[in-house]
Image (tube, rainbow, N blue to C red; front, side):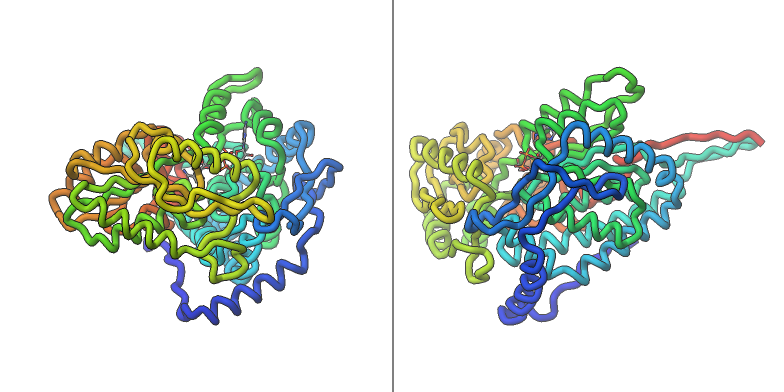
Length: 514
Ligand SMILES: NC(=O)c1ccc[n+]([C@@H]2O[C@H](COP(=O)([O-])OP(=O)(O)OC[C@H]3O[C@@H](n4cnc5c(N)ncnc54)[C@H](O)[C@@H]3O)[C@@H](O)[C@H]2O)c1
């Protein structure tokens, strides 16, 4: 089956972009600052306690006041999801897939609105926001198609007098915990993968981007999702997250976020609580410390462009961001000089102004964390671009480049999740791959080379889940480049790939004598 490919725009002009954006913005501005309830079993529940979602570009503009779940409400949602599972698991896979297809059509119709909302709530530049929405659509359609492929199970041999079958059945109630950086695509993708497989879901979105998640649940409802199949329960990870991860009725957890939280969830999910009669399955997509490798036989302009784009797209707030570059010493100075030039050309400011390449970082905590890593970097390496920020109006960090770093430097080992890249020098290509692999993560990597032998060597030895040649290391496409990492980057789960739906199901063997 050919996976759906998102239709390319026919008009790439700035004018068309601007018209689309303004159209989306007009719709979003009509609902800015509203109150949003929880959605449990289809019922709207408003709480006194709120999550305040605001625009990180100006700290002032209110995106929405979102009701905050408590443990008691999480328990209510668990009961609703348990109840809904009894009927949803029996709904034909074709019908479940159809809900996703219809939801995708609704989002496509409202694409500019969703993208504009992401520029406001997540501070995403328009092009990145547009890609986030497109990816959400792709996930829905791809997973719907994958479910249709799995609906009749897998062929197995039968024997005379014995008919054998291998069928996939859903797991039960799952907890989906999503991050803010792909506030739409990852939140929607992980949710629909779980539900199309016949499970019911407790969705705990990130507290910085809860409004886009609410809007998405409305879309699912409009597309025909029955009450209780996906329950919307934003709230603090430490309270609601822990409660649901520990819960005896939770059958699986689909988590995307940091290594620290992922490990905490892994530990807690391994505990068998009273009344629990299964081991919880964990699907975890975690952080990255991704490297661009530049060979001496390479297009050096492409190398510099790829390093800059991978490091600073969405202000480096991508798990796939290239926060390290290893350059073979023969070409190190040339590439470094060009990286500095390109970095200094980048524009930064409010992402609603489309001439800005970079917007703000997500919030004050993130701003402070990045700035403290920049201070560490000043001790560890040579600051050659940026190194400062301004949080007086919004949370803006200038694109920052450090040179001459030691591979063991903290800023070369720890995920910063901001617009900071460090350059390291390697003796030769083999040494460069060795440095690139010197990390606890293993998510993405890029290699710029014109040497076929080295390219094949990297294909074999560069230990990352997503490896790219002669391009940057961000921007995987659903169905074409399934996404997920090794080591501390997660559980090798490959979102947007052919095995992903299967992770949300269990295989049942039946044998019938005749
Ligand atoms: N590998 C991937 O596909 C991928 C994709 C996007 C982001 N990420 C990673 O996500 C991180 C950035 O996102 P973030 O800042 O939202 O991450 P985070 O780990 O702080 O939060 C992720 C989610 O976990 C929740 N959470 C926090 N504590 C919890 C707990 N004790 N129990 C349950 N849930 C809890 C948060 O509220 C949020 O919804 C980065 O490390 C990035 O690399 C990975």
